[in-house]
Length: 214
Image 1 (cartoon, rainbow, N blue to C red):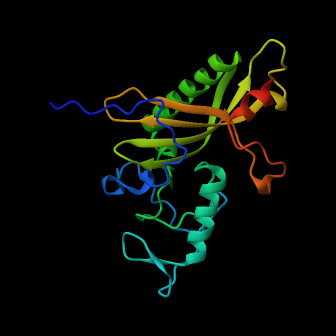
Image 2 (cartoon, rainbow, N blue to C red):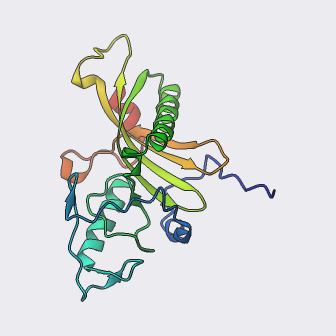
Image 3 (cartoon, rainbow, N blue to C red):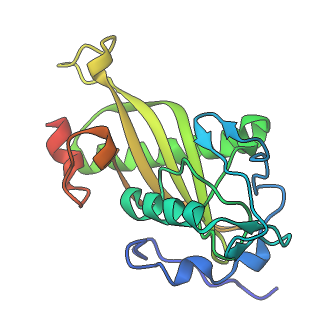
């Protein structure tokens, strides 16, 4: 069997806008979430589609350009982690929300293991003792494998902290590369980057992680 080329851990997600749209023809239907048929689901606004729209989905449905504008704005600002507006399956929707793990215990365990891996990486780099609690959201981009954008909560179990207080619970973001037959690889794990509509803006790099937990 021909050996697949392994994606190096140091491959960065930043500046990958072109790569994100290259291989969506190989979408895994079992992992791809098609649960966004309703107009609103878990806080995500789903717009009605118009025959006069500018962009088409894979099934030929056309979507209003305003939906795409909002989608790309959120992708750009959140770096792929926060999507409240999802147009639908399209070669133009490079990052998609994943919900199938909510009803698939095996997939949920796989994602949980990846989050444990990510928070362990964060702890080792920052001399912290955060413990994974729960997944908040999962987004993904398809490129010969999966770039998984995890948002999850973890509790600070450091002896100097009150682990039962709300302040001890932090929200993290982790980007993990998952390729069949390979060990998942953590590209980075950081405290959630504040968005402009959430109040204070954080610095653009993951240096916010260390500053916020020191």
